[in-house]
Length: 217
Image 1 (cartoon, rainbow, N blue to C red):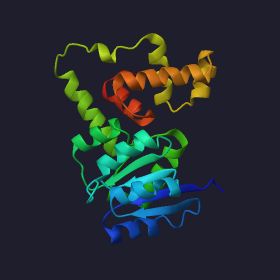
Image 2 (tube, one colour):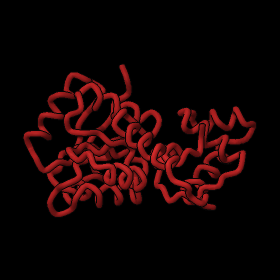
Image 3 (cartoon, rainbow, N blue to C red):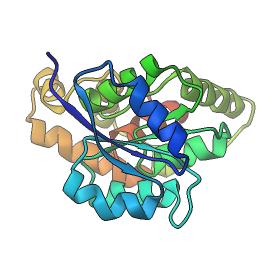
């Protein structure tokens, strides 16, 4: 049996919230440890509940999902946030993925995809589905149609590019270190330097930024 995954859900629509929990009940390794109907309620109880993953709605009263996601990314970086929303706007995807979200799902997602997202985000730190990938491809296509001056903020050396490529291939820091003949701590230092330079909060943001800006092949 797979290791237990502790999940919190924040959504102001109780029927939807309960529906998600019910749909995921067949997966014995997924345990819901917290329900919240707004971001403030979630943050007030998240430390005690200690989830591995939060399913986060965006539009909620008192404190919305965007604010809550940024707070969790800053204060509880070990907790993954999967946005679960009806909003398909590109601006939400880009903003959330670069500011702490580990994945972005639409509310019409199949329960199996939600389960897959929860499992993958725990295993590798991010989840990119077809919806997010289409946005990345659209932005990449738009870039090729415009001549721009390269930004020094996205310039990376060969070693950083190799690390970034391995990260996007889902290798762990230890595995990357073994391949490159350096310590996992060295790889973590390079990751942290890249995240700071690109202004992203976690591995998901780093992968999203790298793909969006065509920093890896």
